[in-house]
Amino acid sequence: MSSAHPAPGAGPASAGGDLAALTALVHRLEENVARVVRGKPEAIRLAFVCLLARGHVLIEDVPGVGKTTLAQALARSLTMKNLDVGERLQRYALNRWQRCARVQARAIRNGEIFHAQGVVRWGRDTALKLLGERLLDVPWLYAGP
Image 1 (tube, helix red, strand yellow):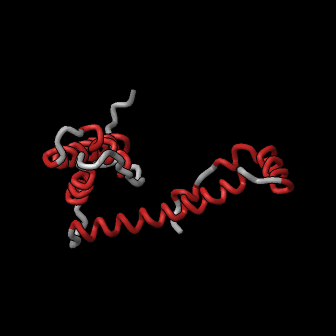
Image 2 (image 1 turned 90 degrees about the vertical axis):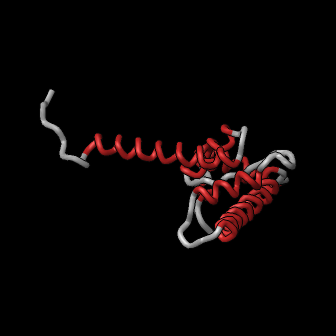
């Protein structure tokens, strides 16, 4: 083993420090949201996991259980400079609608392909045999327009 120590801010030691700082930040954010949204620690944790993975969060539940409150608390905790909560939610909604439009368009096309008849059905089956799992790659879902 070498007795040499890496320079401060270099190598794996700093990566661990960055991870510790990020973990502490996420815990503080979760605690901040939990002050507003009570009794939903798993929902709060999963929302932050989705956001950290640069994904979208779809909150589904019965009416009156705090979905809007959770969304507002997330927006307030993840402050965007010079934007109020309404503007943040509008930006989120715009991104969500664009993604939903792509998902719906693909779902319609996939439905047509799934229920195909005649030559189109033969073409579909041949493509699946030749391309296999490569057809299951879905970068269109997460990519921009």
